[in-house]
Length: 400
Ligand SMILES: Cc1cc2nc3c(=O)[nH]c(=O)nc-3n(C[C@H](O)[C@H](O)[C@H](O)COP(=O)(O)OP(=O)(O)OC[C@H]3O[C@@H](n4cnc5c(N)ncnc54)[C@H](O)[C@@H]3O)c2cc1C
Image (cartoon, rainbow, N blue to C red):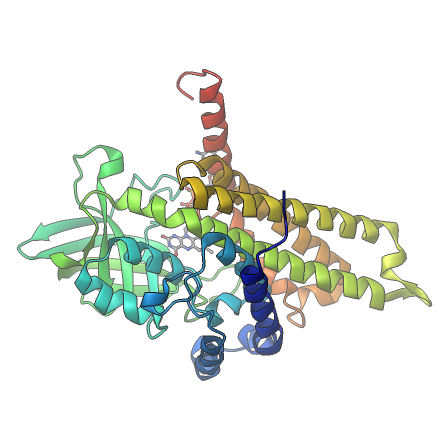
């Protein structure tokens, strides 16, 4: 078995690593301290430089203006971009736009492709994904209250959503709404494009998360749809297939999230090791001479390496055999890597003492922003339960 990356992957990784260190990391302090709108001119300039690397929109095909990376190449590059909170944004492969682009690539009509997908790939607009509702369990996306009713040539949408990430400043939302209430649960909902600003679309508030209300791309909105009328042509894919499309959207997305988290782990690990060498706890006695700190470093190293191998393997299975065959791997990496992430970031914060909870390093941002990793894209417990059920079915357990 050969673990060395291909020369092509190695070149992409080196370019991404160098770019993140040179161009993205210096912007972090501004990101932690400033409003998104005030940062946008600098971010536009950052994206112009990122375009010049040839890696812009790495997940999209070349004919649409992307870099055309395979899933395993994307995974390797994603780790490098994940080292900074703005890495994926710089290259226009940030959530939720990356998933929306992948969805539209597969299912958009020609008209939807022109109007929404191409400007998204070029980085001219942003988007959001509006599925979760405050009144219903996000863990069971077959149970939604939001309705879309056909009225002549339009859909009329009524519903209440929250955690519609990045809605502020987005050009459109992809909304999950029930269009066939009498169909079996998995065939009730559809996905519909709603341009932000359509009468009846209202952004109620950006929800404070861990004490931070956020803004622009870095925010999570509560949204109401009230008699929100959009053309019937805004339906994505066949009616009633919203759940299947959402699952399809999440498959590669989970690989991308996991590799981003491994990037965060590596950055946190690097900061922890540097600090362990530099910080003296007594004259001539750096923190790294203490066994407890050595334990954190050794455990983190082993866990990050295990996580990376699992994710790259899952990406390889998905690329080779498809998302269905990769289901067990995807469930396993989703909860495994999210927990490695939390342990590694927590140890790095602890190693930094008071400095670790300030915004003078990115650790505090990682700590508060990524607690959600165990919740979004399927809570840990949901992935564990579905993985275990599939395994037990193979052992003959009925009704698992
Ligand atoms: C930062 C962040 C960003 C998000 N971005 C988006 C977005 O852009 N668009 C969007 O539509 N949604 C988004 N979400 C919502 C996210 O998808 C949901 O929060 C998630 O699916 C869980 O749903 P819930 O919050 O309703 O929790 P619930 O479904 O109510 O579950 C609560 C808890 O119960 C437990 N649980 C649930 N089901 C089971 C089970 N079967 N067995 C055992 N335990 C279980 C889990 O521990 C879970 O955390 C985001 C969430 C966060 C935190």
